[in-house]
Length: 451
Image (cartoon, rainbow, N blue to C red; front, side, top):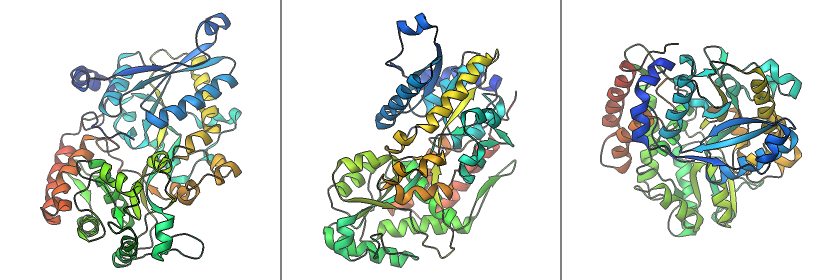
């Protein structure tokens, strides 16, 4: 998963967005690539196969896995070929997607993070899905977890069909944990319910590695700062919302969550000023026993050859709340001024086929949103996926605000407000005060949606 900024804050209507997006796109320097489909070409013209245009931001192993799935889908569907266009993650992608929808030249299908729906769907940039139309393809609302199905909606309307859930978890080296004596009888890490217990466990693993117990990279990475913060903040039972003039949040929970992050980083078990790259390299070099990161790192971690295992990040606050940061890639329908029902129906079928073939998607670390795949015997054989798959039932998406979400400017600015505190150069209180001021500006300058 890449980490780059997003379009401007606020809900965006079609007319509002189009007025300001041209300059933003030029500054972003969007790059577009068309992924060739093995079945596409002259044969499509000869057999009059419909070509569905599908835009997404999936690169690396995710892009390869999606290409594999669509190759299978295109062999199954005799009438349509899904043709991919890949854009750069973050600002270039969401800017171009919104411009296409606002300007009347959108693709048939596109990928969006569920955490970004609030900023785009209400303004008419996305069309609604009708879950009942999936019935003929064997898909229903019951096939998704409750948190994910709920977040697929904005203002009670279904704007997205989730492909996966991807959460922030704890990977650990099973061999190091075993030597440290911190494994339970079933091979999982022994439970820790307080910060002190967690640190003691990490210290035991540090005694084995001789360097670190915990790897956590955040320096210059606001997304990673936000993911761990939101995990702890949610475990405290806290939420965020907004009035017309300010962000509403739990100031005490904010301080405790950020303070806990600072305590972990300033202890002897971790490197206080570590980048994501440093964190990854120390963990894969067996110089630390565990690592906080996203499930999308699974492919790289497995390739390192370490004795890899995983678990949800434990609740260290005594609240009994299971919660982790998470998001979902999802399929959206960019608004069509002149809707072709045949193409729309083909889009429904294509999405249904992707969901049913999403075991391949799970190999990249993501947990399929389509639960029949998760409950299949084939998925149960994937390790360590099965050890964190349950996070899909209790993941907490970003606050449902127009300016929030994966790769958003607000998320980037969150990182700027808290990084000094995490580095040990600033206080938690100062970070909280700066976050309050920054967030209130986002609320006050949010762009109203229009149709």
